[in-house]
Amino acid sequence: MIRRNGTKSWKNIHATVNLTLEDLIDIDNSNAQGFSQTKYELLNQASKDINDLIKEARIKKKHIRAIGSGWALSHIQVTENWLLNTKLLNECFEVDKEAFHETYPEDKKQLLVIVQCGISIAELNVYLELPKNKNRIARSLKTVGIGAGQTIVGAVSGNTHGAAVNFGAIPDFVVAIQVCVGAEKPIWIERADYRVMNDVFIEKVNSKLLPDTNIFNSALVSFGAFGIITAYAIETEKIYHMKFPKIQEINLSKVTALFRDPSYYANIRHLEMVFNPYEDDTFYLVEGTQVIYEQGLPNPRPLWVITDKLGYSPGDLTTKLLLNLPLVSGKKKNQILFKEYLKNGLLSEVRGTSGQLFTATITYLEGYNETAFAVSINDIVETINIAKEATRELKLPLVFQTRTVHPGHAVFGFTNHSPRAIVFEFGISNDAKYPKFEELLINRLKAQNIKYTLHWSKNSLVDKARLMEMYGQAKIDTWKKSRATLFNNEKELMEIFNNPHLKQAGLDVS
Amino acid sequence: MRKSTIRKRPALLIILLFMLATINNGCSTVHVYQAGGPQGREGGNQPGTEWESKPTSTFLWGAIRQDVKIENCVLGDGSRLNIEEIKVEKNFGRIVATVLTLGIWEPVKISWRCAKPKTTSHD
Ligand SMILES: Cc1cc2nc3c(=O)[nH]c(=O)nc-3n(C[C@H](O)[C@H](O)[C@H](O)COP(=O)(O)OP(=O)(O)OC[C@H]3O[C@@H](n4cnc5c(N)ncnc54)[C@H](O)[C@@H]3O)c2cc1C
Image (cartoon, rainbow over all chains, first blue to last red):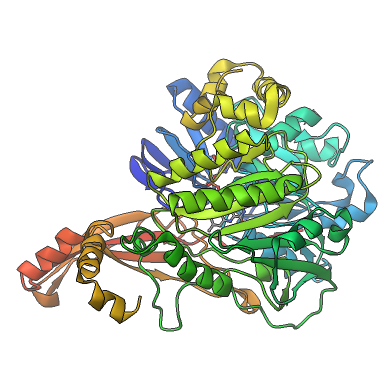
């Protein structure tokens, strides 16, 4: 059901976006009669409620945007009219054997689930890894980010990634999308060459089938521009453990030798590296290998918990304050920051499932920005040097972390560099220094002809020219054409989902 | 930071205090939230709604209180949700008001987010 909260002021989790909304709308799975419903009834109620809302927005000429957990730091969830909170749509559904398409591989059937848009990664981990039904096998997500508080659709739409060196990013395990665009029925999108559900199922979820690979790959990373996504079909895998040895300290020549050697990746599943840009030749390697799942092992200590046993932790704005402390050099602040990072932010000598290892959700770091860009692994050395020089030039206190990701299929996948992407991430105080530093980094990358892409949900600097540099005309055309086809070329409908972020990137027009 | 550094540089201490008051907006915030999860795994923060808040006050050192009634932690059909987290905030103005009135008037802002309904298995 729909519940309208009226005019509200709203900010995202890191308070980098502040909005005054005309209406904050909640949607949930309850029904006026109080009946318990079948899975099809639940899915159909949610899509009907959302489709009706879009139709109303069209008549009233309102912009509408769905949000998940509001974790995106860029302005991709911005709207001035109606913001739809989807977090209460958090159910998960198993698929009946007879609902699969005839070409869908038999061995994958028990690994596929249908998830509602608002289920969080943490809820999904519990659902998959600790099955309530004894006939179900335990399963795990193929990859996750550091945190587990994002909703599944929010995470996919903003291109959340982990460090899956042989798989890809979160969008890469989605195999079907149900989206509402204000048409007569919701649309069920699959790749034309990888069909998953059959016509009987699609009929039961009251949807119209759209088997189109370009539209599917465009809709994955579409940050709310392709309508409101109500559900995905996702592929998981049998539960596994990841084992992390003690963090290794290595130098740049070892980094180069390892990262550029294709055979290095054969035995690892997860690869991170951190460095303090003020240290000359020290890098810290975090390597996770896949091992067999063993029941009964203790839960690893959760990372990123900054509260001590008595409940003490830095205040909401203290990080910003400390990073801006005058008379203390960036280098000095970094020494402290880096030590804390090594202690609280990295997986070392632990073993667990991805649901046990990647759990960070409680973060109250207002005024602090996390941002990221990706380059090809071939450009790792040059990019490390650029990152170090730029940090030292602006005397900033910041730690760089890299995560290596296999390229995937999303048209606007920012982690799609070949042969693998290396994502450079850093936290920075959210003030005038942030865009200045990023401009400096981007200009240096361009000066050295290094192809880069910016993280959609962490970086606000994507404009028309930059979009072209990052993805090229062919991909931009594919994405725009897919969007127009999905909306049946109805400009009025597309306008409902336009927002300042799309306008800035030149993606609001077909 | 080591004490000696602050002693050597009194200017640093003054600037630090000034920044605490301005950057921090003179604002003190305490978070109250749930932790833990099934089989001991940390579920972290799992809100189902966005922040809602109300200003409230106590008068005469608690002789009169103003309660906060939470009415938005419900689903569309009216059934109640739990509360996932609460935030108690005092900004500079509220702190000054409490000090100047010697605690006769103690204003605070209370914010909360509701919990999610439980994910159930639909075979
Ligand atoms: C503590 C923390 C840790 C993080 N860790 C990582 C990490 O390890 N790796 C990484 O890559 N990123 C990470 N991020 C970034 C985060 O994963 C992304 O910002 C993600 O997109 C947030 O998901 P969300 O559910 O909060 O979505 P929101 O921020 O609410 O929304 C993101 C986008 O999705 C759209 N959207 C949401 N729901 C729907 C829907 N139902 N239909 C259509 N569009 C929808 C929104 O309109 C918006 O454009 C982290 C962020 C934080 C705060």
